[in-house]
Length: 336
Image 1 (cartoon, helix red, strand yellow):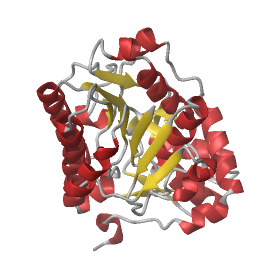
Image 2 (cartoon, rainbow, N blue to C red):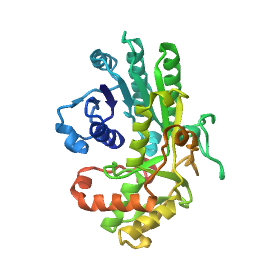
Image 3 (cartoon, helix red, strand yellow):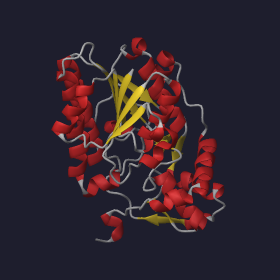
């Protein structure tokens, strides 16, 4: 079995590559990642030297490079490669359009046009943010309209629409997996959980947007990877529909999240510091994952407290890993 993983050196992709190689002894994994600021071969650990794994330093927005990559032929494509940080998208949306839209198009075009029988199955990793803000008491189903409210979310919504169009045009075995917020070890420290943990451990202020009452659902990375693996390994159920949700019942307000992290890091909650809210900051996201649970027997197994504790413990033991990653501050907080 030959598998192409795009963005396999990033947070989600690297966890998937390691798990897939452990669970599929006959697999050959080609990892296409151009190693931008958030991607590193260090994330792969033992997989980096596994003879069944090969890294190709390829920019998925490069048409010729992607087309050349597909001459190898693949049975499965799992597409993680993306720019994902909402704050960065507000400052430089062009980078998100380039990677998330053009890169996804290149991958789909090459998968669909190449004369392979059968064509590879394609799994697109997407986000709950494509739906826009979720009203209280509601969990969006897979038929909810796409109403993205940030450049990041808009780029992912366009990519999802392109996937549906190419899937139909080229009769691709296609699945789009939309997930709630994922966290865990090795997440790039500009994201809120590793940012708060690193600052709490250092006794530095935890910057909390606005009133901190924005609510998010959280999914531990091992549970996320388990969901992707189940969808990849069960084509019969996967083909019952195109869009699948990986959700969570762990819904937490950002203020409560910061307080929990301070407690786990033995830090004073006085470090939690209100800063100007992000432009257009959605108050809540939530997904209904009942169909995924029914079809694949999947549901989250890691409670938020346990997942946060594991993440804090990992960051404490890997301070040098964290220090090697530079953090970035958006322009509206820098005062530019």
